[in-house]
Image 1 (tube, rainbow, N blue to C red):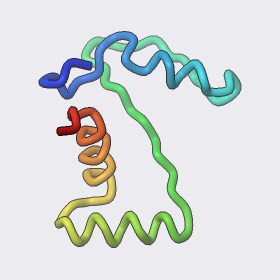
Image 2: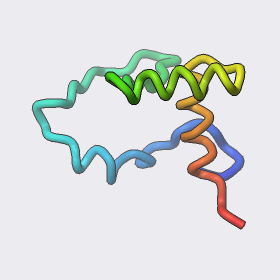
Image 3: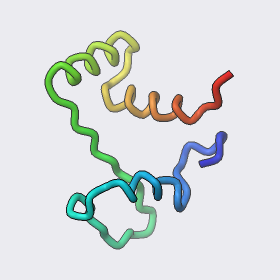
Image 4: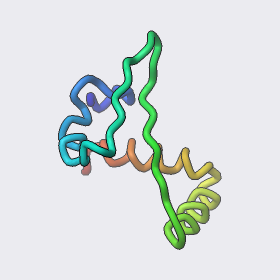
Length: 77
């Protein structure tokens, strides 16, 4: 993924997908204008932490996760 392009490109997730067990993958034919959807499941104490962090930043938990993923792609100084 290009540093200035927040949208995933073909092949961006190939290495991650190679580590996923085949029985946990569902492949569907995309429709025009399709988007990538990734489900993240967080339980127990981790869910509570995520909610606290999101609230402290004035964000929804899903927005915080998206922010963290984008931050991970930024080059470090």
